[in-house]
Image 1: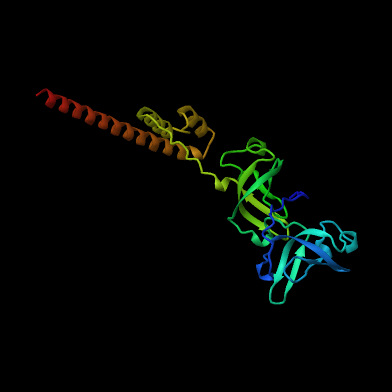
Image 2: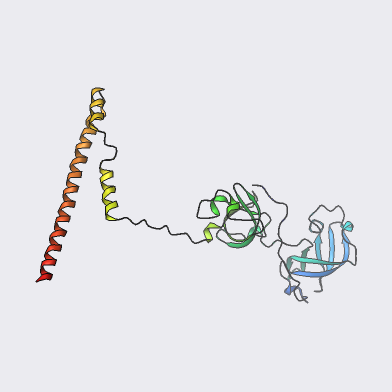
Length: 266
């Protein structure tokens, strides 16, 4: 699966400034002040009486050689709570905006609202806010036949999708649009009595060789002739019985009509 480097992150708004560590929650957006730099990260005052630690790996999406390349004591920064432990009074934060959907949040059958980011011959990529975009295979776009995803989708479209499966190891998320669409009900064909009778007659004599074909095959020593002749006899016998039953039904219907008409006249 091809992967896009850009990912959509969760739109978070700064909550009311917490005053205690117990009020902190993962992914909470806060503002803080850098108080100390270390080789492994920086300590930041977030206003709860305990300084939070941001590891050097969580300062930026790119590689950072030294903390001082990114931060200076006294800097005002926007951060997000990563982990918090009120008992040990430890707070881990990140300067990288968190994703809307973590791998641990994904479950088969879950539905998300996503944005179509790319169309390929084999399907469409949809950003649901996870680390990687999900793929809607062309067979999962619609209940109808789709020759190319562009027949149904356009880049930028907002769509509802359902998780079919995922693999963190392979960085793959399989999605479906079709599963959330109502399955169309096929119209039942309507046949007249004449069409039904004709179809029966055609089926009864379908693939039955002519008399000339029988004679030719028999002359050539075709072993299937005997079986074909037997099949032909059975077919014609069944056909005669079928026509006889239809004539009998028509005669009965005509007799019933005459009887009802006679009673009506009297």
